[in-house]
Image (cartoon, rainbow, N blue to C red; front, side):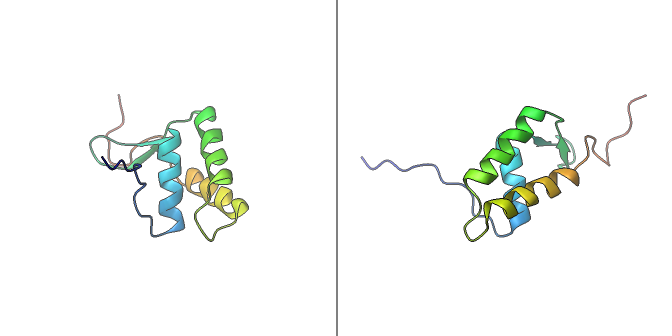
Length: 88
């Protein structure tokens, strides 16, 4: 029987790759209702994401540029969904 390794989804942009790395590391997740990315504010998950970016950057991208993109994407994501009503 032929066994295949699970493949990562095809990523077309550096930003998309960075979002995938952040999700894989558990640093961000999606709002269940609206789909917006939300920061989990977990320093360990952030470090895991940066380590992943350093060790396995997108082909053709230097590790330093990969880490910079992950940081940039993480800095652009808040910890709340802009469409969810604020809790009273």
